[in-house]
Length: 81
Image 1: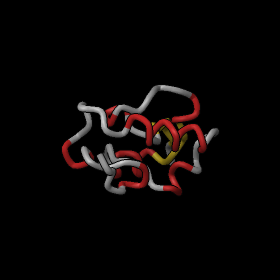
Image 2: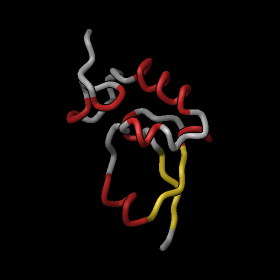
Image 3: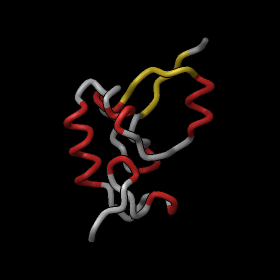
Image 4: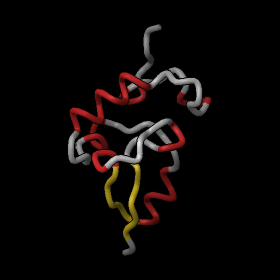
């Protein structure tokens, strides 16, 4: 099994390139999942899950988000505007 670094909150969705947003997962799993907002289980893989969850919630409605996740916040739940 080859491992590679994965951004828990994908860079394509506005995630930062910080240590607390990176984990090592199986290469095939990383390729299969694509760029999607993380679930609670994924956030718990972070070295600082509270910070990751707070940053996702604070910045989850930026205009550069992928269209399938545009109105979704933490755990993919709809956000109130």
